[in-house]
Image: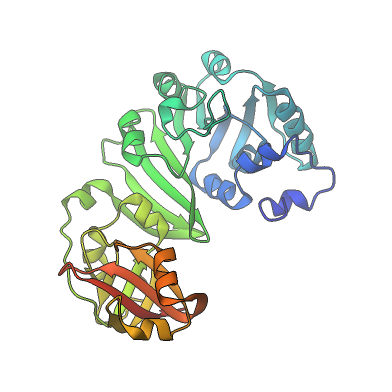
Length: 338
């Protein structure tokens, strides 16, 4: 709790009804991100859970309704909101029933449960609870803005097919790991294609999916500097447009590594200085003793290569095993640029 919700952990008496509730709730950092995206008079959180998102979102609204069907979570939320000094109306109800009788509000927040009746994780929006697909029209007619939280494993194109009203899609990462997708939709939509925002503490990069589809990537052999895009960009599918936006070339259509002759300080991802471009059977690899190893579009796993070269993990050397645009398999020995 201290790692995930430090502000809550600092308050005596905070209740956690179960370890699963803590596991499934948003972190303080991702909840604070959501609070930046919406605001207004009235918020309704239809899937309250432990209440973390609701607590932070409520600070952007004059009135907030928390809705949750599980009694233990409802009682914990009511207790915790009081300790946090938050004036939030707490309701024990099914999301569908509450939605059917509520007035139009400024924003509805929904974080559908991603587990089936057997407790197994599900990814597709059609398998989540409540049934967001079936509630599509009701949700959008009861609010001016909808904020929908999805699993980081969710298919972006599927979500946009179900919610064509989407205006912005946020990929939220924490310390390089994608944590959640946030879909922000208006009741009528803007008529423009959605903009995708890649974020990790700050916005790293944003683009329109339509522009990515039309972009042409350029390809080249490794130059002085090599780049690995942030995980949020990889999740977003931002593979081609960044060539033009940052003046770099791709090493291979499927490798998702980039290169340039001059350092691109603002590239959204890890940056490396290229020291050597080696073949996999080069004896110098075994002589390293230890190195950090990443595989991108290469016919061997990290475990296979570590065993082959007798490599321990760590050190100053970074090895990128990849395929180049001439279809050759190479190991790029690099130094990371901090």
